[in-house]
Length: 115
Image (cartoon, rainbow, N blue to C red):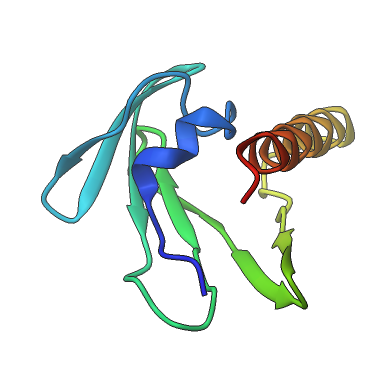
């Protein structure tokens, strides 16, 4: 199974960070689209669980489940978008489109690298 590498996320996850991630204790710090954010990743595991928890600055963490599931010679990536309590339909739809763009970017990045 692939090894979780948070520093790889900015190469495809524009919603998470558009800058390098820097480790600070158990968190990673990044400059997000709306300002500085702190990200906590699940510990490395052999099950493809790569969940992350994003603290956008108000103290509440947004849980983003992410799974990498081996499928023959390749893998499937599944990311779950939870609707946040204060999120209207328009914002939820925009987030879903943003995540889709990021997952397409990940696919292209992996295909380009020949992985």
